[in-house]
Length: 166
Figure 1 (cartoon, rainbow, N blue to C red):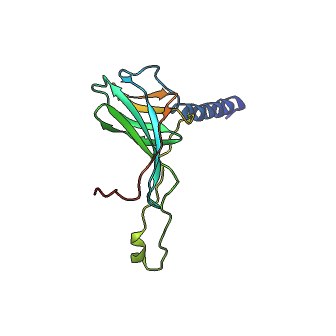
Figure 2 (cartoon, rainbow, N blue to C red):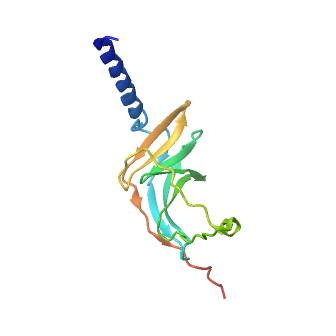
Figure 3 (cartoon, rainbow, N blue to C red):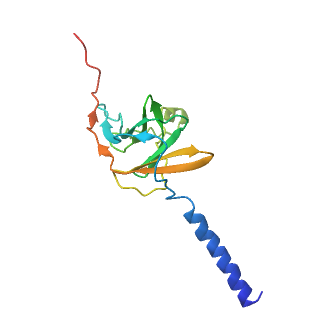
């Protein structure tokens, strides 16, 4: 190989690597074919030690018809969407108030009581703390829509036990 063809070869290889890294992110659409009104998020914490904590992102929608929003990206994580009526939401766990008790034993049967370690599904998007991205399919194409200025709702502290009605 002469120097010109070698240089051309390295140039093409390097361009292919650069092209692969830029395909994934920031292909946001400007508008969605449905209405999102007053999106917000709120944090919650369990009243039981080790009961967990998290943030829920709520998106009230209308005129959504045949579109299925499948994931929400928020604060570096990705969650599967839950739909109830005209509300879609995603649940994100946080590290606060999580159980960290593990049984370490030479007997494997003793360790069966250990809970699985939660591993977050990471998002490829870099977002501000009050932004989220929704993902859905439209005409067999993956579509991303960025929502800015999510309002912070009131935090919820769940009680440690149900109250008794007397």
